[in-house]
Image 1 (cartoon, rainbow, N blue to C red):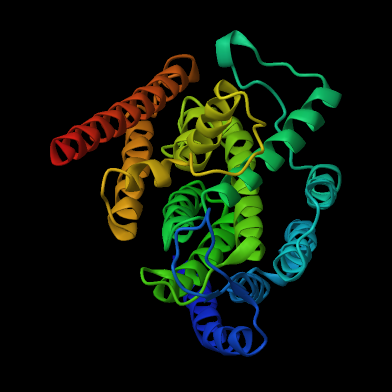
Image 2: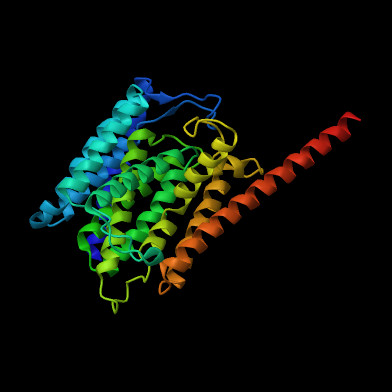
Length: 359
């Protein structure tokens, strides 16, 4: 456990020391996020905080992972460098969506074909296990792209992306430690330290944003952890105290906020006959704020929901994915419907109040 804390402290210190430099340099060079119609923040804010997160994570990983095990993480770091430079370029000069996708596919290809990070079966979901190798590669790459971009989509509120990521990393890191997977535990706590340092500057009112640089790096790291967790959990002995009966449900629970948000906005946009990729204010955090909650309250509420799903998976850790996964999906749908109902009632009340004032 000491080495995990050392990795977290190392990345924390590095990130904490670098961010003020980035803030000052970004303001001098006008590398800032300007408020606009689709943006919630009201002031010009530096947007390159992801650089500090990446440097803290990378340096801590190189220091604390045993040099004899670097072979196992070098492809992770190479893929992260690819996604890091894509993020930096997009923050400086916006890339076309297809160019960002190509870069993400390159990083995912490194992980899948060189690291051999793969979803090797259906893990017993609905009685299915075997999976053709070609399909395994496709599903894994697709999963990496979806999780990476779903996390990027929730980065729209002070402290939200960092807070959700910190909870997910703490959950994954703790499980990797309990499952005796030291390398991945160090990586998880290394990134966790950087994000905690970043949150000091990103909590409302925010002094810096992580930008696409940070969101893509964190999103891809969480995708790596989720896929590795699913596969590693499935091969643990049934008697191991850290083993979940279902492998997919716990991973989905840890990432429930970005995954549910992505699915929700896609369905809403399709229902409105819009392109699923059309940017708008349909995200969960936008909807919650329409109920009158502040940035901070919205972030804490979504973090609480995330903890609820994680705790549910732990409580039902001996339950099969055949039962737990549909339950998680159903709970997500019900919470989304409840949110929409509350918003509708608030709108109706506001309209009624306005009509009374007019009359």
